[in-house]
Length: 248
Image (cartoon, rainbow, N blue to C red):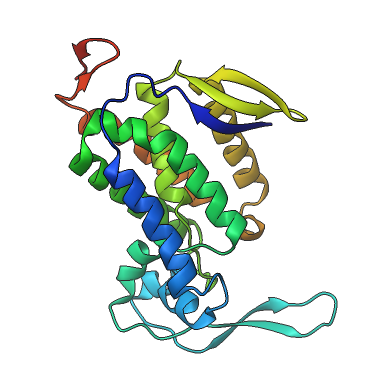
């Protein structure tokens, strides 16, 4: 397994204000609005519930989703009302997380790979690219889990789009990573990101119909494919400083 911890930023000459803002918003939402994971009322109101998106209905009630195998008691999710149309949760859920480790992992990947894309695309294009990839990722999850009442949340769908874009624009860029049992080395981006995506495909296939045991693999795959498909369009006319050419 490869765990990225940094990459080559020697050619980056701009400050990635938008990427920093995304990281800050995610942290602030988790700490101030989600109460570091303790504010279930906010979380269950603003996370994306596939059934709500499919039906356009705000479901505000306890919804049974299974049985605890240890106790035999039914498990119910206390879905909360939202003051806006339910479709807004496709956006709000992108800035929410289920735990500190969920937040840390996502923000680490965004910190490593997002700044390079913002440098290449420019601030506004990067902002739109990130949000569009996140929305497509959320819709991919909804499409694969239309009957589900289990909320989904996290920035990983949008970040998967960033990874897809990074892979096409910087396939051979050196990525510092921890591999195997703590060995620190550098690998090309196509290896670090390619292995990550292969893992998403395998796990997504193995957990199909089970919502990935808590991981929205469909969102990861959908966001990644969106990033691959859209990055060249968003990069039109933007100069590749490392190559000295305009990449169309």
